[in-house]
Length: 444
Ligand code: AMP
Image (cartoon, rainbow, N blue to C red; front, side):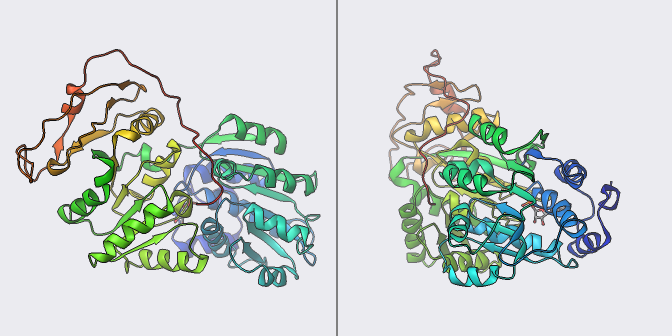
């Protein structure tokens, strides 16, 4: 199959050729024809599947072929995204696809001054990529009008709800023209996403593509069990021992990010961090330097790193497991892209057993456990499996005799099928839900 056979016009084909896209990805093959026809769409697809081009290419074509010229302070298509980084990334992709088209594109998001954005919107913009809060601010100040909006795209809709944007989405929805095309992309379809879709979409076509990285199993995944207080130490140990060239590390909190970065920098390890407390320019610079290979270790919170397109990343480490199981899939989706193999290592402590179980249920696999001889935890992590069972009360490990501690398989990964074997063959104590919706927070 080719992009031409999907009915795309020549200026788009030329842009795709320059980008080296040869064959449409599954989500593109499924989405492009119906979107060109003007249908509403509900798509289960996440970053890494090529979904951005899946909605942007037919959108740009329709905007070129149909409808009036954009008026002052107006927009013809709105792409709503959860985070600033994603806004920049999606806009950059759209800008490249629209290279040979007479369309104006722009991105707006919070955390930066609103005035330049208001100025830029004066002449009107064909495609506006926006985070919901800033878009509403601009709308309330009459900097942007919605009367010309012919297409609305909700990208990573699940994450927008996770971040507490449902009220903003409702307000935006209320201000939009009733006749329009709406496309909704989401990694998961919870009841709240279905309710949102029911309200916003008109007889939508549903499409689904499996997450590329997990399905392709090009990512080797392990868990290393460890006591909570020794996680940073274990990370540094593994970094040296495994000679990781470049690592994206996920931590649960902003403080966690800063602490690990400080510790690494204190050891003269080239590390930087991104989270929601940092100014946008600093976040972007850290990311650009990481992508350019100038930074070896980038430590991030989930929201700051969501949707980031970083190619050829060999290693992802979860210093902490994510609260929301789906984020595990997003995190490890940063590696093993484009046919490369990657590895994703999670450092898991006893407190995180339920999170681990939720991830195993969601990904339908029991993650292989390995132990690091010098770091065998005092608080054992109970055995888990893909059925959601958590086997309580594993036996306490024997204390290592020497400071080095590693009588067993010194210097090697210890494959702890033994952790499972040590656990009593007890009844399952609890089933955890398919995924943990966890506490919601507004900012990364
Ligand atoms: P996305 O899922 O939209 O974030 O896209 C993931 C990555 O795949 C981006 O770097 C895109 O530039 C790239 N990509 C998207 N579609 C194609 C394609 N048909 N061929 C090659 N690369 C693609």
